[in-house]
Amino acid sequence: MEPAILIITLACGLAVNTINLPPLIGYLAAGFVLYVFGVQADSLPLLHSLADLGVTLLLFAIGLKLDVRSLFKAEVWAGSSLHLLLSMLIFMPLLMLLGAIGVSRVADLDWQQLALIAFALSFSSTVFAVKVLEDKGDMQSLYGRVAIGILIMQDIFAVLFLTVSKGNFPSPWAFALLGLPLLRPLLYRLFDRVGHGELLVLFGLLMALVGGAWLFELVGMKPDLGALIAGMLLAGHKKASELAKSLFYFKELFLVAFFLTIGLNGLPSLEDIGMAGILMLLIPIKVALFIWLLTRFHLRSRTAIMGAFNLGNFSEFGLIVAAVATHKGWLPAHWLLIIAVALSASFLVAAPLNNMVAHIYGRFSLHLSRLEKSPLHPEDRQISLGNPRFLILGMGRIGSGAYDELKTRFGDNILGIEHKQELVEYHRERGRNVVQGDAADTDFWDKLERAPALELVLLAMPYHAGNIFAVEQLRKRDYQGNISAIIQYSEDAQSLRELGVNAVYNLYEAAGAGFVDHVMSHLPVAERSNAQDEGKPTVGGAITE
Image (cartoon, rainbow, N blue to C red; front, top):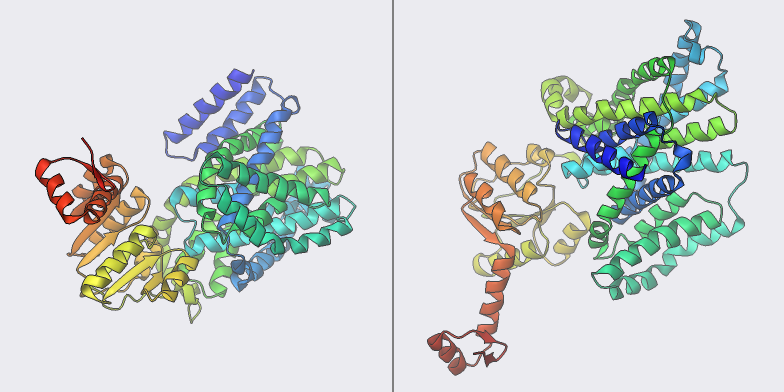
């Protein structure tokens, strides 16, 4: 059946992709299809191992991008805690009401069992939310960072439950893990030594699976939490982003196995499907609670609704909670299937809603704005550009070099935009005028104030889609000045020119030309003249035949 697993999974993924839904929904469907054809979850232990690896690498990748300071922000730790508490206080009476009116699946449950179900349903999916944020390029947006912080807090709550549910507590040796930050200098030196090839990938896998997951499991703690902590230890390194990219396809492939295993849990009865459908009515309550809570913490209504829709689903951790509860006899076995179906259905509904959230906000923005609390969150206020002549979007190596060259020629009337807070602080320490903002996020453009003297915008972001989006936003705001952009692939040039970009520079071609200019500038004058006269290429200080 192994070939059939791959064929059916690919076919289902392609089918949903053609109607602009995330492929993960196809993988869920593939799991149910495979079950119909007789594939049992217990017969595929390797699939479960790969699924566990996918979740472990996902949390490790989150850790690599996580600023731990974000967890201590009120909208994250207080918002997630209050949402969990309020969700349970609302969900439990509603489930009791369903039992009172004769819904059989909840009629015979006591309040402890209802509390377990409400607890499981209060979580949002880390796998789904991160996948949507990555696909939209919003991982570093304010709403994305808040959502990720809330998800990590929920993961911590789940870890606490799983620890208590085992009936035993972590080993006393777990306290030794508090000394892990002391190893950071050694880990950084090793990180520097592994280079950029396969050793980098091996180092990442070692840190995620051994230095994180295995080490935490050894002392009686949840392996996935260990992977998250391992990623956080490396997050401040200059190659953390490169490591995340090198592990990306491993993570994506293993997560396919995770979604397959959900569908392989079995086919629910019509009664189970009906109960799952009823549970879906709880999602609008989850979303409304998130919107209300996030605006209480002075976030703009747009940020709140974007974050709330990203979190508006049920969670794989909720499924794990249900699995533990059914295994221990705390819940009837059919509740595992009910929550699995509700989880799958929530993904099906959440995927198109996340694509439509900007339109939904635009339609109801007037009503939603009434929820906002003044003063607005410091990171969610209008972005003042001042009055620069030159604007650089993306302050990586290329953007930084362009900034310094413009400053040498034209003075200080330059502004850089960068979405990573650590890079913003780095540039400011070196005297560059840089503000934080994500030019690939609509929210950034909505908060941007006009700059009347702006003459030139340089698009130095690494992703072509981000540059395309930035050009479209500039045109919507009637910007009439010049736009220049960098590209990595020659086929990207045409789409930028069609949008009215004045100058397009191929990154690799420009690097080659710059290299030749640099070499020629270091040749002795006579040698340089001879090379130019004879039309011969030069390498180093020699003229080649």
